[in-house]
Image (tube, rainbow, N blue to C red; front, side):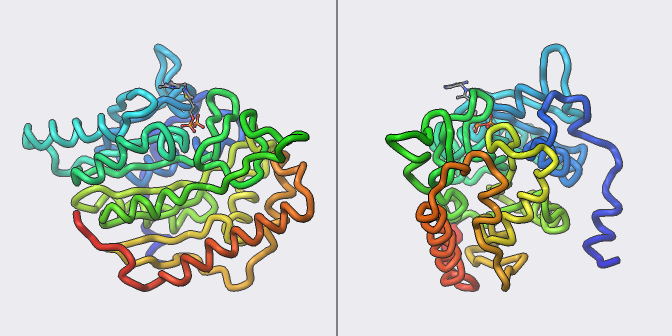
Length: 308
Ligand SMILES: Cc1ncc(C[n+]2csc(CCOP(=O)(O)OP(=O)(O)O)c2C)c(N)n1
């Protein structure tokens, strides 16, 4: 067993995001929260934006949360977490508490973007975790700034006029890093050793940190509920979702993919891409290659100034 494996084997058996919640079978977000809370532990406070994870975890009067949990509005989890940070500091109680703000991609890439940016700029000590399932799933699969190119959603429909979303995904982790914060990382439930390591690093930062978590959604992506981890693995192997971290302004790949798989293998498991022409599938491949080439160009460089 490696040191990393030993560390994970020693994690509490207790589930702080308990089973019995109402997430769909195969939900990538629920799995992410389960492991996030095991990594964070009992001394955590969670602020949760409106979205699937809030709805499925807290049907009144029940809750799946075994730590203090605050429901914010859709757009202001980062602002509420800022207030919690300030209040704990004023009371002299900030030490030893992991403060996490949670939002889906709609809450993070779009509507809560301003609140996140403000909290990062103010330098609050908290970890923002975006559980990205690439659309507004709670309200019925509307496209967000995180929805990938040509994906079929109810507001970017694949029909005669357009073939799914016409714009690529917004590079939110890089935008977070450009704020000058000390730690940004992409995590996936398909690599839990890396996942735990990064959550621990993010929570240890004396300031803001940002985690972008890849979360397949069987309903919105139209894939088999048993295929969640397979798809998450393929996202890494095709370089659609590379596992990297940006620590003190320097980008490092944590699971380098030397022999990449064709993106088509990833696309064909998901109904949201079933309308694609050969040409469109190739355009997605070109886009993925270009984004990865960009990350490779800045790898190992002090690409972002650290301000907080
Ligand atoms: C100001 C405001 N606008 C719209 C809504 C309706 N609404 C609630 S959850 C949601 C979508 C959430 O999407 P996302 O953040 O991606 O999380 P997911 O449900 O996919 O996990 C929307 C549009 C709202 N609650 N508040």
